[in-house]
Image 1 (cartoon, rainbow, N blue to C red):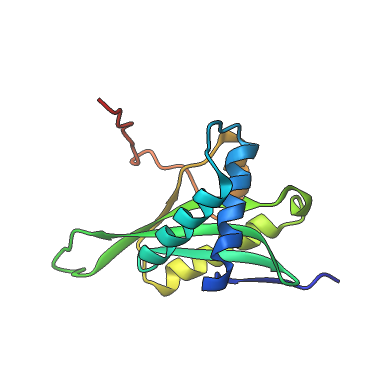
Image 2: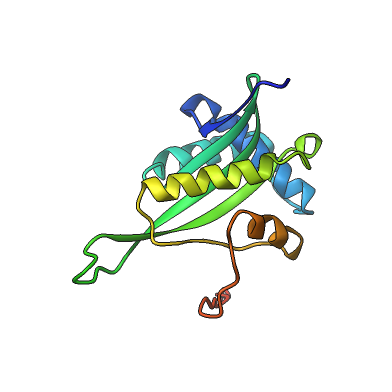
Amino acid sequence: MENIGIRPARPAELEAVAGLRWEWLVENGSEDLGEPDDFVRHFVAWAEENARTHHCTVVVRDDRVIGMAWLAVVQRVPTPRAPRRASGDLQCVYVVPEARDGGLGGRLVRAVLDVARELGLERVTVHSSSRAVPAYARSGFEESPRLLHARITRA
């Protein structure tokens, strides 16, 4: 049986997480990405600077990081009944291709939702590809007629 763990990313694993993000971008057809080493340095610095608002959960097999998911926490405007409010956005869910279709992605998403519960978040949203919608639905996500988004274009 494989030695699989799902847990918060450790600081020493951020380079591996950056590598997964790079793989995701390449796999999804991104071009003109620059140099991988430059990206890794930037990504690790970004992750360290944003650790209070962006929580990374990883899937580890033996000692290798093979999956990641990020929970971005956004503080919300208070109300009299809820002076401290926050929501989350599930981002960058990725499992390496050779480890897919075995339930690890679902376990990873559920682990992030556990973190959201521990943080007392009101809700978690995800911006999904149409292909991944059924996987998120299996983890408890549902479509919302009240959630709208606007694409911001650069001038």
